[in-house]
Length: 261
Image (cartoon, rainbow, N blue to C red; front, side):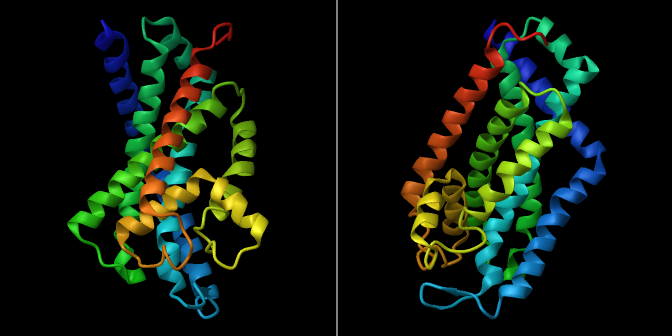
């Protein structure tokens, strides 16, 4: 019974998200091209003056894991736009009227978002040698695991925010208010070392900082320690905790009674 009402609907919804994404080629291009431009332009602009840990560093190399995180951030969050679109088209009402658990809906949306975001992140990861990062089977597998964790938490965050909203425009405005500050203050754009004291506090309170740190450790950039990023054990614990918390919050919001969907 649990499989019929939860796992099978979740699988179907996840498949639907992936198929819809692949049919919208502009989303594929946009989710990759914008972070690539950020990486290339900021890397070229700050390369000569970049310092980390009291010495000079390679900014393109330092910023690469953060740019991969940006790809996952954009893709995972924007995949939840479909919640509002499905509600306006009447599809969501049909799903809610069917014998499907709310957990199945959340799992399906998260599964679809994770698949899309990890696919995009791994595509961008292929550019790592350009940044001077050597890839191995182990580093790619470790990075893929980090991407799954990050994508799951960010997709769940998007679901929690998108579910009560009525318009795509409103959701976009709210998410952009959080997205860029969340990324900029994650250690992706500049290191913890050298930042103002109050800014370091904010960066350490940002859960995305720990995902970016995990990517540095997984890819072996050598910049994590010099940049003052969290150690891998702490980063993994916080990232896993954040993913679990976001799932619980998304489940709670989607499962609240009384909403007239």
